[in-house]
Image (cartoon, rainbow over the protein chains, first blue to last red):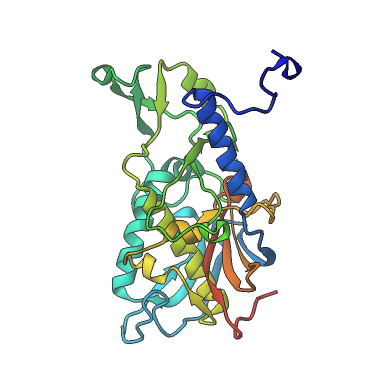
Length: 179
Length: 160
């Protein structure tokens, strides 16, 4: 019913308790969050980049651990700013103590293997001494319905796009199919 | 490849300090030609898994990259925000400092594999924050993360 006949105006909120009302409220919350953004004045300085995987950049030692500040550890470790396993060699010499190095190394190793494992295999990035990428990877196939877990199976498939040597220039081999 | 999407760091949104760090969404990018192959398999196909990787570990991973880069470039001329979080001491406040791209600082296409860049951010309050823009696999134009690593001081020298 048009507004002039006594109906609700076009921009009236939907009835409370309906899915439309929930969507309307979510949209309002998003708009409010966007308006609250502090809009900092941003200045970008020099960019450090890895053009070639084997490129090495070394920073001078800071003289103490950059995480806990302890100067006493006689064996400060070299810190890889981007993990070496991602093809970068940004080395910060004698920058972390043993305890901090163990903590950061554990997190890095976990994230790199869980999140970037497929990418590293595809680009043929180094995998440590005497460890080569397998030619077969296991692929877990899930059924259409989430509830029918009993019918899920694990199968092995050969990755056709996998290149053993990989690109050493880091040139894109990916299509961005955002799902 | 799984790509995590993050909102800008809470410090820019005026959000209260919180010890919770969540990745609200993710995208999946396939290598060229994979999608056609995967279509031939029935049902949905997952490579790797999200369940074994916690949100917080991803936040710590970005925090460590950003903090160590800032320490290398600015030395100890800034007040670090993330050093204790990287040592996994609570409260970490990761969501306050680790986030996605700041909307008013766009990225440009690059032919570099990864890029790291320092950002100075002047807040309306007058404080100047040191942030690091982390772009892993930037050559593929994947997600950009802006991590606030600390507060600039009078001694902070920004590299040109």
